[in-house]
Image (cartoon, rainbow, N blue to C red; front, side):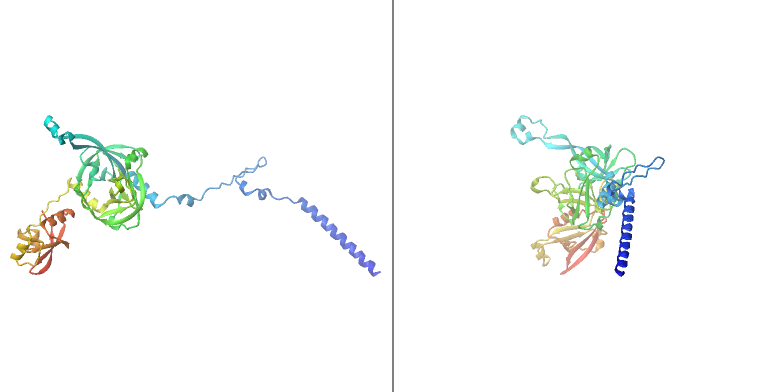
Length: 407
């Protein structure tokens, strides 16, 4: 009896379990997954069809983050955009003088004695410049515009203007131009070349090979400041290149006179010349620029006077010291320059230099002959107001006398 009771309970439980299972399966078949949840992620940009009268949901737009687009802008690109409007190409028609090749031959000189020994020709050359004043004043190299008969300025965008030379200084290889057409022109920001750091970014802008006329915008090359205070002394042309900035930003033919710019978009130098390997004439990454602080001193004087005033005097009359003169004067010196006269109230007189003093140095540079003094003063490009320290020998002692150059 007990067994029968247990078996009945088992059948009842089994029947209830089967009923619950059947109900569960039926409910699962009636479940529906929401349409928006089943839409693949890749298709989320499309609007779903809606029933009549129901607004269409806008498509999801996927755009690049603004920061990612902005990341293409760098200090270099911003500096180029800032300075480019003030960079100009310079086309110069020059008059050049050449010796007649026939005059080197005695036969032709005899047969045609009336033939001129020299002839002139009109040639075109290219260069670059930078507008630093909104009235149209331009800085460039002197060698770009020397002997110019016509000067054409090509601005960014392709506009062309004529220009004239306000002043030119061959010694420092700098020139000041002015656009003849009145107007307001985009001017660049002038930096401070005394704050340049070796290794910082440098950008050369200009008109290499006349490409500015083709692209209607200046050509830019970038590098770093390689070195500072590079001195090259007096060149064959008479120019003096001192305290130059060295950069590996490519400088090529036509870049002369263009700006060297830092990453802040400030002009820190005027591109002037390059070293090229094997006389190829192309850039090998060694270029030099005039520091802008030194350039602006010259440019300001050219703007004021039209020339650089290098007239000065020390008031000294000197003579080379040789062995015989040294024995007569009982001097224990073999070389130097002896002072034989000092003009009263002259800079040397006020500095305390006396007749009989022997000049053995200038600013601690050794002086052996009078030409050393002339070469030193010339190489330093000294002008009125500059100071010189004369290292002199008097009564067996060395003395230093500071002399201010005056007219």
